[in-house]
Every structure is written in structure tokens, then in C-alpha cells.
Amino acid sequence: MNEAATAFWESYIAGLPAGHRHRTAPVSAFAFGDSAELATELAELVRSGRKMATASLPIELEANGTALPQPGDVSIVTLLDGTPVAIIETTEVALAPLGAVDEAFAAAEGEGDRTLAWWRAVHRAYFGRILARLGGDPLDDTTLVVCERFRLVHPGEATAEPVGERPDARGREGSTVMTDAAPVPRAIEVEALDEDGELQSYGVDVLPVDEGRVYKIVDIPAPLWCHEDLQFEDVIEVSPLGADTYRLLAVRQRGGWRRFDFLLSPEVVASQALRDALWRVEAADGLWVRGFGGCLCIVLPPGSTYDPTGDVCGPSG
Image 1 (cartoon, helix red, strand yellow):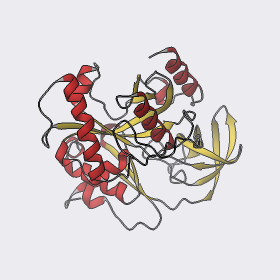
Image 2: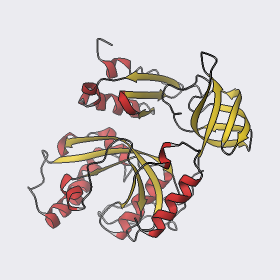
Image 3: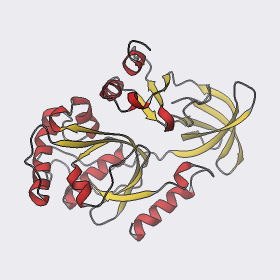
Image 4: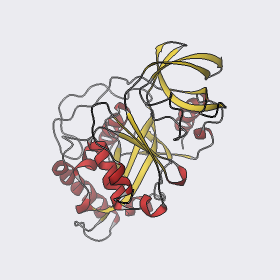
């Protein structure tokens, strides 16, 4: 990484609680796309929270000396000149034929009109440019694509002025770069009594409601098997104990999201059925996160009637 990316990373981890896994995680830096304009636009889509997935060819990774991404990988997104913009964490990686990429993944990429037809058109053009430069077999529906999903963990600052309606480097039109800075979540540790009456510490990402005492939880708390009073979009009241460490006092407001926890076998983790189930979760405006050892947590918004249990576990449960 260059000096700017290193400083960006060090500034991020300096604000994390002691013991946060990102403090000791390996980190890499990369830019999206194959032009300065495209790298800037896609970085802004990531920073705004709209882009939550990316697709690449294995030959691209090999040419760049980059290993296949894995869930839990942490990366700094940069502009083409190396300027750091955001930090993301990979949540899922799958190898799929180009023709098997579906609507849910295309929408998660967050580009253009987010339709599968648009995704196929621009990625065939993009992958065609990559293969023309690097060589390899001709592009067709059987070409394997690395389909990576990720979550934004640090949005950084805006990188560009609004550019309005214009074509981008992939030849599409009507794209607007998002430049309004998103609120920056803060990682804190919250101490609370577990079901056995033991005091435990839980990592949560929050936004302040009343600075210093009341916060809204804005990410799925870790560990996955978390306290019942520390759930996604709950508003909690806390008492400061130290630097970024608090004692839970009360839940001011429930977020109302339904939570499902699973412990999956390696066979299920690697299955297409699970990937299909997670795409259905996203289609229902839900969120999910996978942890080590086959842990999976899914949260679904108020009003959703979807139950992912059958899709995740199969008929046998």
C-alpha cells in the first residue's frame, strides 16, 4: 500500500475498540475499473452504500498477483491514483458462469439501472477489454466470474463534485456520482449481562442519537450469537466506562427486525442453494453476515414475512 492508504488505514483502526479483529487483520488496497473516471465513480458508489458487490475474472486476479478473495478479507478502495476512499469487508465469494449471474447480484453491484440486462451488457464489454489485454479463452456464458459481495465498514470522505448526467467509461449514460457524505458509524464495545448473568462484551457499530448516552445500532452485532438487547436498529441507552466502552442501561426503542441464526456444515456453506437463499434475503431487503465455523446471521425488516429457514437448511431443517 502507498503512504496515503497506510495513513487512511491507521486512522481507521485507531478509532476501533481494543481487541477489534480489524486491528490485526491483513489489509490490501485496490481500485475498481480500468480507467480513472470509472474508478472514481465506482468508489463513490461504494462509499455511498449503493454498491455492495463486484465481479471480476480469475485471469484479472492472477495478472495482478491477487489471491481469490475470501469472506472476512478487509480492503481499502482507492481511486486509480491510489487515493484511499473507503474500507470494505468481503462477506461472500462465489465462482459462477457468466450466464448464471442473476438479478439479485446485478442489483447488489449498484451500477446503472441495476438490472441484469444492463449488468450483462456492460460486463461483457468490460470483461472483453480485460481478455483482449490479458489473453485467454473467448468470453461466453460459461466463462467463470468471481462474484464477490462486501459490506462498507468505513466510508471515508467524498472524492468528487457532482458530475450530473454523463456517459461513463463503460459507455452507459444517466449515471450520477453520489457525493453527499454518509454518516460515519462508530465501533464501540457494550457490556451487558448474558442469559447466565455473566457480564460479556459485545462489539456494535452505532450512530449517535444523543451523543454520549443514546445510540442506534446500524450493523449486525458481533459475535453473531449476540445479546437479545443488542439487535440491528435497536436504540440503546448506555453509560460510558472508558474509551469506546459502555455499559448497557436500557433499550429505548426496538428496531423490529427479525433475526435468524444458523450453524452450517461446510457442504451447505459451499452450496449454490445457500447462495440462492442469501439472494432471496437481499431481495426481501434483509441483511446477512457469515462468521467463522459456519455461523450465519440473517436479519429481516419489519413487515417482511419471509422465513429463510427452509431455504437455508432445506426440508430436513
